[in-house]
Structure formats: structure tokens, C-alpha cells
Amino acid sequence: MVHNQHITMNNIDINKTENSGKDFEMSTSSAITKEDWMSKKWRPMMGWVYMSTCTFDFVIAPILWSILQAYSGGAVTSQWMPLTLQGAGLYHVAMGAVLGLTAFGRTQEKIAGASNVPAIPSRPLPTPSTPSTPSRPARMEEPAL
Image (cartoon, rainbow, N blue to C red; front, side, top):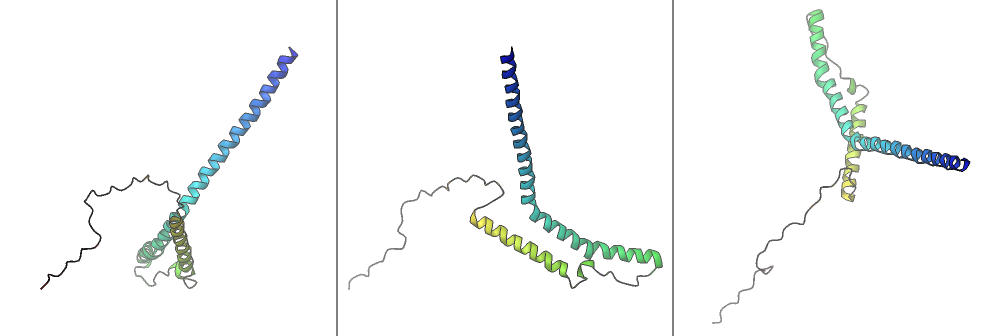
């Protein structure tokens, strides 16, 4: 009886060890999935953030500013000063550098063959079945006089 309990306790320990390994594998795979999502999507997200910032600062805010002034005082007395242009437009310079360098880096990754997107399996291109033709036209000989 004691021997059976010992085996049962060992089985429980082994099961606990195996389950903890599975939990570790599951947490690791979920972390990898989150990391993959972030590594795939941060470049487009930077572009969307920059585009939405510029849209707000140069389109939406000036219109809202004029409407607010028209309703409050009846006349538009001052113009909207874009927030991103204050400080000599450093925001646009920085975002241009970030987006430009990441686009360059992504291009280099694609050239090197590294891609975060699964590749589409390619089939070999069909070869045309034409009779063999010389690569350059044959010289015509001049008739003898």
C-alpha cells in the first residue's frame, strides 16, 4: 500500500512538472504572438499616427477654430497656429526621420529576404515551347558578281 502511494505521489509530481512546462510553453507562445504583432504593425502605426496628427493640426483644428470664433464673437480675428509647427517644425523632422529610416530598413529586409509576412508559394514560370531560334539574325552573304 505504501509502495502504491509512493508511485502515485511520484506521478503527481511528474504531472505537476509536465503541466508547468505546458503553462510555460503557452505563456511563451502568447508572448511571441504579442511580439510578432508589435513587430509587424509598428511601422504602419507610426504612419497612421503621423497622418492623423497632420490631419488634425492642418485640417480639423483650423476649421473648428474658425467656427468657435465665429460663434463666440461673430468674427474670425486670429488664425489657427499649427501645434506641430511650433518649435521650428521639429515634430515633422523627427517623424520624417523615423518613417524614412524604417522604410529604408524594411526595404533592406526585403532585399535580404527576411519578411514578416508569409511568402506566397511560387510556381515555376512556364517556358514557351517555340522552336529554337538563333539569338541573333544570321548574316546574309552577298551574291557574287
